[in-house]
Image (tube, rainbow, N blue to C red):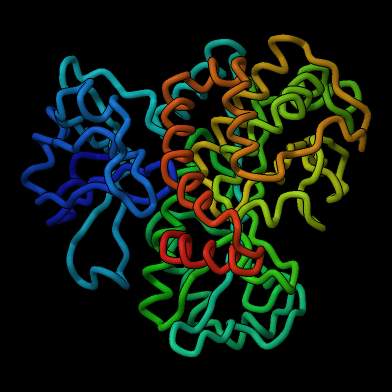
Length: 440
């Protein structure tokens, strides 16, 4: 971002994304930006590891161990973008992602989600000379805030009439995202009433995760201005079997512009590297589920129809957890179907790359297609145990990130829902909606 672009704004929103992909930070005047770039702006320890409903995280790393001091938020100027017109109107407000740094020596805190993700991408480049190209498919539902009626007339997959009828809302959201630098490229009316899929352009590095994180917050605000709610709760209705996912598609490229997943002699097949990479995803799928489906409610989707059940793979077929997609023109990528709409996209990206790195390092053998090697965890508590036990994945992601992630999930959500263990499943579902509705 050129220095001149800094002067386009009177105010700058400094932001980080926490483990729930919730945007946190503060707004400064444009005159404060040079100082923030040099010295950072204070933000208390633990800002990325809050519970969805507070209070502050009791982990010692955020309190007594650091004597209750602040971290420093340092803007990454290349991420400076305009804020939403539907929120700020004619005010000149920009938004910039920040790194969290320790105040003692200004070193980067690699336990925070985005910085941990960046560290894994740097490891991929350093160890294998590769970078990623990736994209997410964002599913969510839109509901009239007053009447609670879903936007759409019927469950009719790929209905263009449903998009055309409500284009001020559906295409209006598309336009708002593009103006903010969130590169949406397609819209699809999904199979559930009021369910839509927005896909993002394929981008390099961490940008895909950044855009999904921004999309979630921005869609709530834009649709709210139109009288609608955006629903990213994974399962909002137990009778329809309609769930919201965030499938993640990834390919790996070298400096010569070649896709490392492709067998150069047989372009329709995985390379040896690609087979080991995919084997790593299968090996670590139970632990990856903790990062990709991070709420109690997510497990009404996992192990259900049209959702991941086993750690398995196949080419093209939607019936498996990992799907190899082959396109004309020597392109191939792998779709990770575990992520739900409640996921933190940075942690999905980091976990996927970390698992692939281990598969290549250890030259793990790839099972045959459709082979159901491991069943995915059935509850959040179970998958957190899998993540905690997966020391190989933890070492690549960063032990501190994993420790704090598990501690936070257990301290808030697991503790909260354990108190309802004697109620019916129907009543538990109502508790899930109550707990997650305003946070996702």
